[in-house]
Length: 134
Image 1 (cartoon, rainbow, N blue to C red):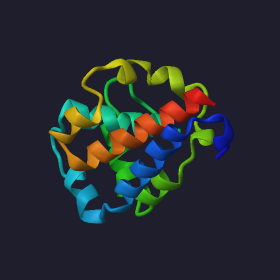
Image 2: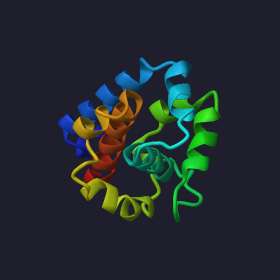
Image 3: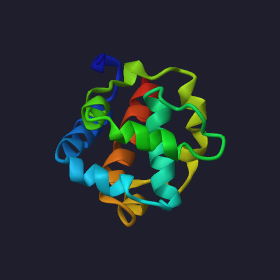
Image 4: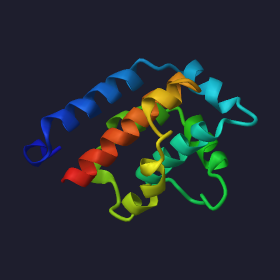
């Protein structure tokens, strides 16, 4: 990561988000996968992860099926943790504008719904902010 052009606080935010995600285990992800009617914030967080990682396919209504497939990948957490802001397609940034401007799309609000998604939303914000700063 070219940290010389990115403010240190943003780099530290990504490091902290990765550390939190690294503490999660397969059963934590499975808990999210088992949701039949996930909370809208859960869906929004996972759609954002799909968009950033270039795995978003549908997202006209909901990418829940794509999110389920991605979370079913045994390397899901590893993929997210090792993903770098430089890998974000520049076309993904505008797709996230509505989520990033949503006052409920933050750690405090998401943590009330899901710890896993709280960690993921912190990662989304960190990656997005670094990508915008570079």
